[in-house]
Length: 155
Image (cartoon, rainbow, N blue to C red; front, top):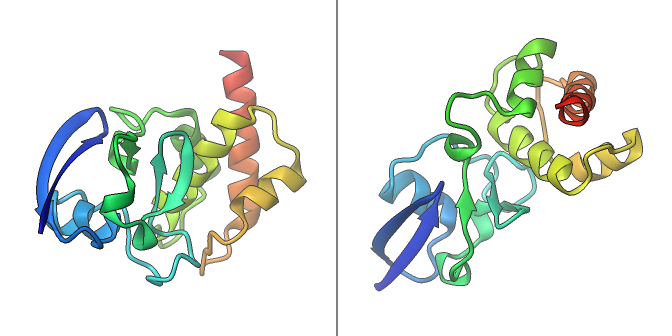
């Protein structure tokens, strides 16, 4: 066991865990932040996506020891009231069906828009590649990202 000090969603957290513990389990099991979902466990589906700094990363394969002093943002910390432009667009377009993958989808989309506020369809597809939606809502996901991009430009 080792002690780690993590800044998550703007709050400092002190935990004692094995250094190889994936951030997914630190978040879910130790800090009870369950918005980040377990999907495949091998960083292939995107359900566990969080932000490490400004980058979308798969938390199921991110050891707590590799975080260092980088800030972590989870779906719970993306916006206080669920009013991030991507979250609002998701609701407007009615993206989710079962909803299981949506936290990871939203986190990936919001990281994309932070780096590229006006992505093309190809850039959206490339950024979202690997975020699996078993319900097949990919067309609505792309539409919501475009809507959020337009909202960002108009605000």
